[in-house]
Image (cartoon, rainbow, N blue to C red):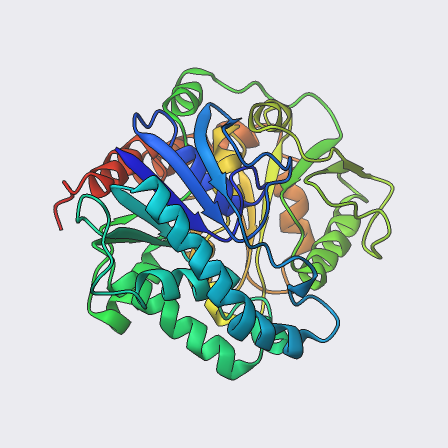
Length: 403
């Protein structure tokens, strides 16, 4: 079969969304094509090999470039994105559909991709359909009204884009959400339940590693903490660093940052932090297995409920793949905190009054990996078994899902 992925990010993007899509297509036997808003980082629009995934062709005929709202003239640029750029991008997507003649389109409507995808698919209904007549599958990774997006683009525009995102979910043949709270929320809004929960998962070889390798006791200081991915919430990160500064009085530790950004000029950066850049997935996993703890950080306040309640950080299960217990910080309503409530996989921080002595005692435990290992394995099998997610997702693409 021919599958066309349609989304915001290119196939070689470093973010969690691209990592989820690449992982879900590992071993896929059909031909995979990709249409995105943003250009590929390596500039190659033809066949690409990414972590074992072969892309027949990457379409990106209308990248917005400097028109993308960032810091200056954001409202004007957002107006131009909606009214001038999105019709051109929708036309480019239609051309990709005409060339590929996909049996199914996998829609991941994120940020500005919502506008052209909605115009190309929903705006063309009922005349549009895939070559097989099966329509499209929609995955919601994040709601559009997160990270102050409305301040840059305007509340009325974000409201329209949120409606379009919901329609792409509701009108899809099959659909999925990133976590159970989001699936329940979408069911409340649309009356339609997700066909599956689809998110970054744990590969069979990593579950086998968890079950068959007994972690040794940590031998002496320092305790090595890992943070994988971009730091989005600098205020919360600064709070965590201040807490770790106090812990270091009795418990020597290091913080290792893995990601594409340089944080050496940030006010929270300390001499006991080390930056490793953006590693490949295999190199990252190898590096994480030499660590003692992973950090998953969301907002401790509920100022951004659409993100707090309904997003799910990919790094949470990335640490599981390396056998790491997790320091999970966030508001009690956070989806990841609810997960950590159900499985004892590490330390939970839900407010700024977390006792330093408790934190120090937990981090200095040389048996931490052994202590949390049974629950990490249980959580990995019950919530992040990627093979189960793949089989269900592929059955959606093939029109075989049991709705």
